[in-house]
Length: 75
Length: 516
Image 1 (cartoon, each protein chain N blue to C red):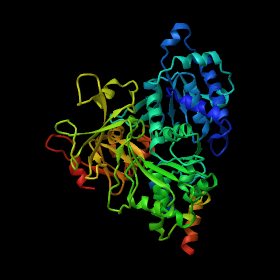
Image 2 (image 1 turned 90 degrees about the vertical axis):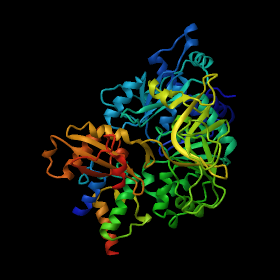
Image 3 (image 1 turned 30 degrees about the vertical axis):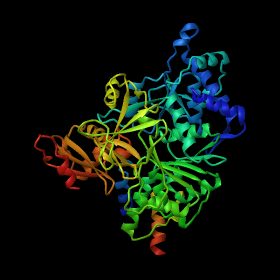
Image 4 (image 1 turned 45 degrees about the vertical axis):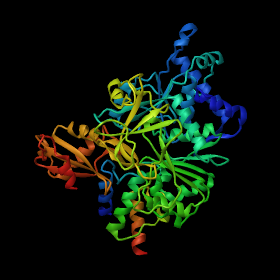
């Protein structure tokens, strides 16, 4: 989870990822952030995030993203 | 012949009053409702700003009214309200850094600030849509305003990045927008039951095409929520559910769909006309769309805000290989493009020779608002004649004609870049970084391959309070975020004890670019 937060903070140094819970629904992350984040996650965790995983509920918070990463790692 | 964009709206009110004009996530309104609400808003504006009467009314000149925009149709209704009041609108994104908004307003001095969804700006008086729309319009006053209207009056101003650190307000007339939509209607096969899927925010001139093409061709504008552009599956679902058949999108938005191979999970056959602009369209992305949405006509559009959206187009009429560059095509009817030789300043008339793309015609902006020097620099006298005043706009883009007679873009003459669909002056970033007290010098270079803005900087006194470069860079981001929008923040930071100088004593950009 620490590594994940670190990646997120590199992409958006202006945000506090520990507290945000509506990153997508609130329009805080834009499409370019998502592209970058997905690319970084795929490399760092050796996973393949599919377009079907790109749902607001999977990216609204750092915790939700961590859950998605875990799910894909164990798949 | 139209002389006011409102005449297009009123034709729709007469011919198809109950057709849906505008739709977003929350509401939709018909042409008749749009007409009524816009006039009510005009009533509110006029009641609070006043209007000339008698002979003074014949000397009326439109003044700026700012609109705090969102991804909603109320922003557009406010635009039309402002036009009915005899003024011009200026879309403002309140998510911009406060300092940037202050800089714009110091230049603009808007008569009034309206908001579409309760947005506020610290220290400024903002009136919300809900309040403005409850007014009554005085029909006689509106009619006098219309009688005195001429088509060279400004319709809107859109602010764009300025190299000296100050944004520039590009001022566009009714005439230019009417010309734009007339030529689009002649040139492109707009489908029946025309429904635009609006992607561009309203402070981008790409959205001007959605709004006024819909009006001219009796269509609908469907505003697509911003969040969907991060969630491409939902985006295509939205296109299907809303029967969107026409798209005028930024290249970057189309890339996202390709990036995630979205069509492997969901298909669409709704779009019939897909136009794109803003930056160079990678053929790989275009081919992905063409393979998966084969029923659509694809158009490459080219042009800067200063010539009212686009000056040339290319309807894709053959297959392109991934290593081929798409042409930007031919000028629109009623537009002339001159390719000026950088040495002699005279028009190039042979293929294969590179020159600066310059534009003549009704599409030219009135100028940069409140910036006569900047205006004179870019909208200069034409080299074709000195017998009468003839302006051309210098785009700063370089291009050449292929043997097929089609124009092709090559690069920029200056330090303007296109990044994440935004037009950015690297100079504006440098000004913001250099304003930080512990920065001695800084230059930005755009890494085209990785699509990253790279900042090379040199620190001075005060930089030693930061234990690491990482900490220092974080502080730079914090400080520039007060002035610059997110897409302007550098993506890569390189610290130098001494930035290298060239033989003229200036920071050596060429050397630094070679270090990427």
